[in-house]
Image 1 (cartoon, rainbow over the protein chains, first blue to last red):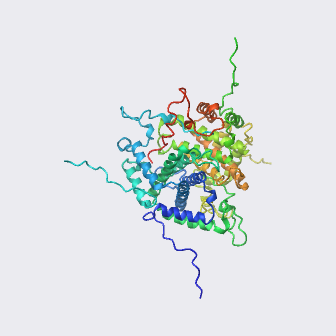
Image 2: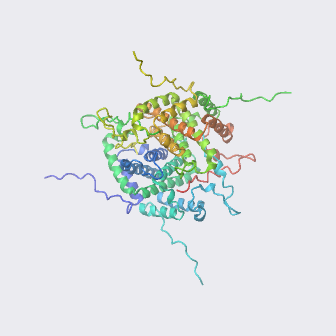
Image 3: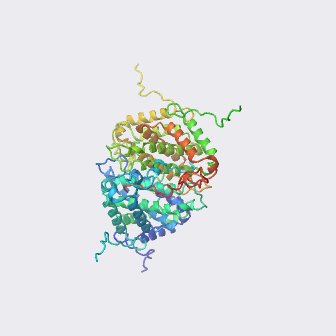
Length: 156
Length: 156
Length: 156
Length: 156
């Protein structure tokens, strides 16, 4: 009696507790390769897709209240997980196509944020780094420059 | 001779090749805890922040061309890494506050996408799953329903 | 004594009380024409720019509270106006390049939304139209279809 | 013989050629008032909705090519109009709740952009204003400040 061919080897489950970003990236890459989607996956297009998915995640939280359930409709919980996954899939795909080691980039950004947001200055506060009034001569020069400098993007 | 106090233990570097999502999440949580930012970190607020950061990433790719460099201005490369990190930081923070195992959610979403986008049907194509014309009786019923059903969000 | 040439005729002020969308569109088009920016203004690129600007507007409201001031930092008020203008500029530019009469599209969408959100059903409620449980035989068939149908976008 | 009650007066059609923003705003306000949705319409919530709708508009243009049709699937054209309308509805609603005269804000922003993007400097170019290398003493001081100053938003 002939055995059924097993077309794909069993893959280990992905879990936050033991999966590395490289392992997750590889799973996403295999999915795309099987569909020949690499032709669409320029960094710009994947940045677009990431923004689209982040908007879909945000949509699930529209009109919620500070003190109420989030998402505000409990039956959306499964969709929340799916949209969070979509954002991650697009972002990891983006990083792969752009040659970015995401874990390393996160580490660098946290280090940079630690300078922009010194613990003692910002504890419990939510202003942007350029909205704090730094006292004394050690302060960042012209901290409000970029606050009054709108982030316009030409050519709009 | 007294030793200098070492205020923080040396942390192992974060890298895609060996860092798990739990390790990265822990690093982000420590950063936030030190600033008492948990009070701002509701799921809705973190979904907002994720969308904001995804928009900042996208901004770096505005006006680029299919065949040209992406990002279109090479000096933006460092900002690309930072914005990608910002999206990831907000998303991982969101997952932590929402109790989502992101790696597991990615695995489930890839499995679901594999059904929505069968390899033989979609190879090399870019339509959404509900824009394919499924032939025959095995087809998804009313595949165009949601295409003609705008994703409006009340109360707008 | 020669008079200084007046390089541009005085333009009438733009105001919500009397400016039509065509008048505003014309002002934006003149700005772009003077900079030869039409080459960048494909519908896709302008949709990208609109999303980017909407993200910048949203950024000003991050971490605000339901009952607190919005934006949460009062000095951001001027930036709010600028970012709202940026969204509008990109969207009107998009409509012009896409041949969309925006006022007419708004009218049609409100009519459509009036069907999706009947006053008596939705008064004071915030669910999406497909999350209401329509009673009886006149109900929309399978109202939950698209709720359980994630808006995935291939090829992600 | 009793006359049928005419529940609503006939409203004049909205068109870009003759509708003012105040007329469009009034139509949107009437729609919302009839549903008692004002309770959800804080500026933050409407900024969220604007970003969500801008993402839905962008989704229709995913994976399109510079030289190909935009949107890439022609049957999406009706959805493009609807999503453009949704962005406008949310933005106008936002402006009404925030006390912003949008036409006036657009006029001011174009004037400001005219300074940031002088015609002779930027003609046919797509860099952001802070990426131009201004020659000579008349140049903006420290034009690259905000380019190297990432737009981080605390508390992320």
